[in-house]
Image 1 (spheres, rainbow, N blue to C red):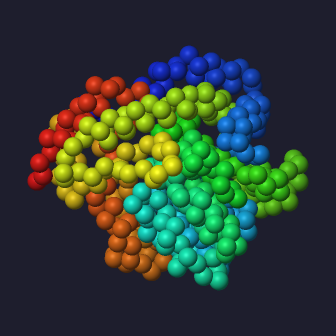
Image 2 (spheres, helix red, strand yellow):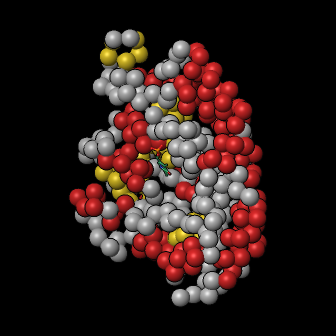
Length: 365
Ligand SMILES: *Cc1c(COP(=O)(O)O)cnc(C)c1O
């Protein structure tokens, strides 16, 4: 069976380094807000080329705190791609603000051409999501934000190390949000996330918000939360960061094989925007007979997933936004046609060959 992913194989590749990191934390006797987190924050800051990094509990918490730190709340609007993972939208609604959804471009990213029509007097920020590991057109998005006086909050949860014209994602915005969920390009062994910014005041505010709104023990200036990246995850992430470029390169090699060796008129392959480096967190193909293709591949021993089968505007939890089927035709089409092929660090190339052969023999239902 070709698994969709295997964290076990990824662990085995670097097992001695992970084990050393875990024991180092256990033996230190210090488990929350210590030197491991400080070291990881410094390393991630310098990897990105940013001034400040603030570790939190999850990617969702990073999004929630980014929106909160910019004082965006009830009565405000934030522009979000309609085809994103639910967390990007939750980051907005958790603060009482309204997500204004916009259909994606041909690269599955927030479509810069559709942003201006969605801007109103209430718009405070644009929240591009570098979906599947590919950068949005940040040059254009930032130009639009600047013209209209809006913040940009990047959702970098799937794209650690991706870049547009050599400039890393996470460096374009007021605040960038990262998830280190175990399967992400940079993954912990539990929940973890981070924010990056160049603004010293925002960095200080975010540091307080993640720790009960407190900068000094038992002195609470803000209404904060408990969202601290713990020492174990911070130590694991230092190992992950050392191997991030190598992992991204390995997934690109798999993607390169899929792009050159998959030949099936029923299956359309993902496109990469010119000037962008894609890290292929997800290898997303489109197929009008997606469910039949998925069942066919499973019969031939290949597991796949759909990212994502129901777009946020059609989820029950967002009925209150008042949308209905047909409002975001491209997002709905992608939800019906997208299929993600296995692509992960540690995936044997023979299994990649198996996936290619299985996809190429699909002749439709
Ligand atoms: C994974 C993910 C998140 C949320 O990250 P968690 O760490 O799981 O909370 C947010 N946005 C996108 C696009 C994601 O893929």
